[in-house]
Image (tube, rainbow over all chains, first blue to last red; front, side):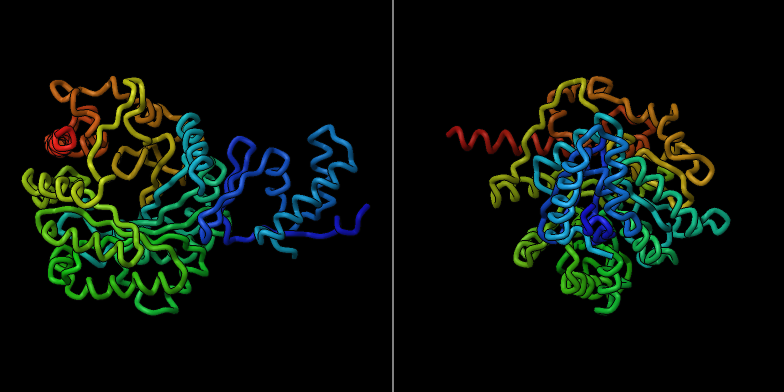
Amino acid sequence: MSKALNRVFKRNRNFPWQTLDSETVIIDPENQFSFELNEVGSLIWNHLDGQTSLSKIKERILETYDQNEEEVEMDLLSLVGQLAESHLIQMV
Amino acid sequence: MNKDLFEKVRKKSVEQAIPLQASLELTYRCNERCTHCYIEKFQDDPARILELDDWKKILKELRSAGTLYLVLMGGEPTLSSHFFSILNYGSDLGFYMSIISNGLKIQDIEYARKLKEGGLRLATFSLYSLDPLIHDKMTSVKGSHAKLMKAIFLCRDAGIKVSLNGLLTEANAKGIFDLYEWADTEGLELKVDPNVTAKLNGDMQPTLYRASRETLTWFYRERAKRWENALPTPVVEPSNAYVCNAAKGKCAVNPYGELLPCIEIREAFGSLVEKSFAELWASDKAIKWREPKIKDLSLGEHQAIYGFCDHCPGMAKNEHGKPMQLTDYTKVVAEVKSQVFREFQRESDL
């Protein structure tokens, strides 16, 4: 398991968001921009609460969806990387 | 939010009755006495006013119901002792937080920064005129204009988006285009609307301030001359389209925790302190306000100008007790818009 999975992130409160019908909309009020996450992305986003580690989130995904563990890990780290780069989340 | 995504989310909220926007009246108290205001008594019943924990429960339930946009209003929301706690709590939950305020309490940069740090994204202020005498007369508070102007710039300096509501009445019509020009120069969005509503108890006194037919005609003509896209144009909708978004994409909560279809319709579904949001949202009363379609309206001879009507069932209920019947003033505004539209069409045909 990648060491990165021990990390814990939390959502940046400067970006309002909501999950509707398993899809998540995140608003960047400063730049009048918005992001959209699909069902799996929404599951990840909803668990980025400053308490749940990425490994726990990976477990949740594997419990919910029938997917290959390695692919899940790669996709999870990739999405978290993008979210962090856009300052939508920060490491705790 | 980018337009396509916003439209997708908005459509989903209407189709599935997800209250994307909730307006929270934190208090009926106010430090202004606007001549045209719809609130009957600017005081709260201390036995019924909500505690902070009640508001927190309501916010959590709205979050689960799908609300994204929270509008804190009143009365004057900043007068609520829970104002900053609710602002912070709402931001932590992920809501887009906004206020509708008169700005009187926002008089130093520390206060404005506290709003920003609390997560405030948008402050909407009611500015009636650039002339302090006219604005102050409408708010019945001397010096309110100067304080509001200060609040506008303090909020902007603190990084909060500011927008303006400018009601059109007989008292401020003359200077309304100066206000438009100033707002444009300052890069502030200004919405001007002639709909002065009756008081919540049906008292028609505020409607005495409404702009006359002549003033409305002058206003819509002049606005269309200045900005091409400001010409009133008919909105064509199928007869099975909903009359409005009440109890579907939006809802409201009064200072006592009662859930309403929207700010204008004052028929409560019940108490959010005693019952869950889900239960009240699925109640017969909610369904009753959710269902009205254009074909259910009693339009009579006004069928042809319905496309120009800003019919609000709540305003109509308040004014003459019949939510599905246009008010006389709605008809006047629609007739004027239709007339101006035809005038400009004729001119462009020549």
